[in-house]
Length: 387
Image (tube, rainbow, N blue to C red; front, side, top):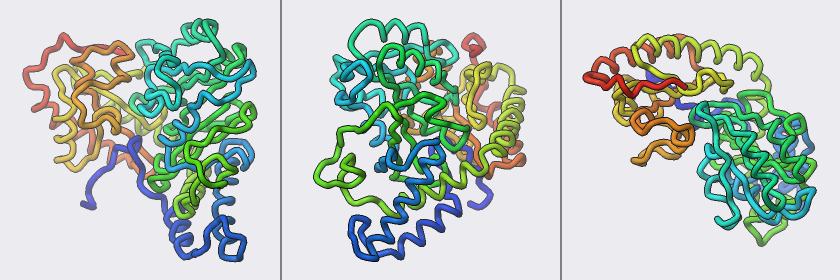
């Protein structure tokens, strides 16, 4: 439907015209990027151009960029007990309680070597607890995401990096939601490993990258059997997808400053409209967040019903993380924040993007007012919470 409104950008984004154009051009190339003949060199040039674009966007060098099949593979590739930290080989994994499921699974660490760092009621990682955990064992790999995919909360990754560095460990930052939405310099942040994904910035689904900081010389490959990606990831590179990722990264970074201001203003307008309904809670609203993200609830609201209601009104939204949609249990992010089960079960996520217009936001607010009259009938006011 041409009149539909898409407000689920944190789940995935529309394909940017620049990415589409780059991918179509790549489709016309026949060569394998590992081949030395002219056709192979043309394919290799596309891969290396994209690698350079990603490196430039994160203020690093191309040889530190490893292409993967997406953010999940990049995260698992990063979470390896074979990594060497300044204080020695990492012996454990410390991760925040609000990480993506691909990080919470522990990567290649045994469960006995994994510990969780709690967050405060706003969803911000507890740096005091991190410091305590770092002092209690062998060198650690710490994983703290740059921005949460549900609440949009920005984590204090630079401060975490200082603590990790003092303890002789390594820091992995899942920047999949933050990359392309806010400025992110791997050196300023102090991260040792950073993961990104193409389809969160207007590129194609099924391609991502792991970027190595100056503290990491190499990673043990997940996929073996070939020398591709400097021996870090076997298999013929996805030339078409990688070309799309590189083009999307260039486009996203070119408009990042303007988009941050414009989309942030739209998000504020949206939340002002939502709050006109008595009892609405916007999670983490007093904390630094991505400019495009809103997670809200209201007493008596059921997220699944709300998502269907919005969909019938022509608006695509999500119930918390898209990766956990369809599951009965409440969001692990809200659970870690101490949100009650009743409030968490009603959490609806709205996320905006570069093509979102003021009219889209106003129509969403109008739809919410209509839906709230039905969905919140007979609600229990006692479950209202503020975060």
